[in-house]
Structures are given as structure tokens and as C-alpha cells.
Image (cartoon, rainbow, N blue to C red; front, side):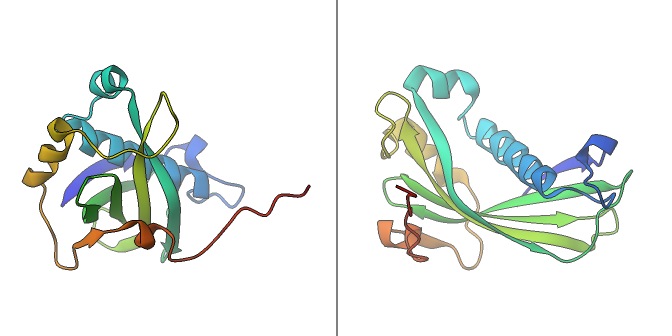
Length: 158
């Protein structure tokens, strides 16, 4: 399991003086990019290969308030990956300094070509990086169907 620590600052708060929803998203995004950099998916490599990660959905569950001045640890577990690396599933958990569970998030995403803006499988160089990642209990091989299990489709106004 990967962890990243954050200090809750005044600009991370909402009108109720607790951690804003947008800050949870920001902390998780920062954690994911830090994790991916450790696998070799750093900014230079992503730019060179013109690929980028995208999130299809994030489901958040809030258990306890996070107040100003609190230090939080955000975990990342890789819960799923497609055989070609195109799709990934990550779970994040938020903990305080005492290890109390504050929030949980489940997300599924994928990789796009920054040239075509289409989903793409990972090149062998990037796909092999996942071999060294811990596979926790519940890890699964993803398919395109897993990314559509909630069957949400755009509903345009016009």
C-alpha cells in the first residue's frame, strides 16, 4: 500500500470549516501522481509518449470530519488493472495521525493518447511497471465492461 501525507491548510477548507470535497479530490490526485511517478510515469515520460491518466468516476464515502491543522495520510491500493493496462482501479483511504479511518474512495480510470484523445493500451515499457505493484486481496483483472457498470450516459440539453 502506498501512502502520502498532507497537512490540512486553511485554503483546503469549505464554508463549514472542514476539509472541502475539492480538497479530498486534490489530495487523491496528488497521491496518485506521486505513486505513478514512482513507477516511472513521471511528467517527462508522459509528455514524451503523449499519454495521460483520466478518471471515469470517483465514489467518495465520508466517515469523519477533517478539521484545520490536521495531518492526514492518504493511501492508494491498485485494486484492478486490465491485461493491456488501459484501465485501472484504485482505492484511496484517508487516515488521521491516530490511524482513524476518515474517508474512502473507489475510482476507475484509464489511459488516453494526448494526440488522439482516445483510450489506449499501455506500451510494454509502462505495462511492465505494474508487475512490481502489490496486488491486494480483492485485486481483479478489469475489462471495458467494468468501466461501464453504472451505465451512465451523457444527456445533452439540445
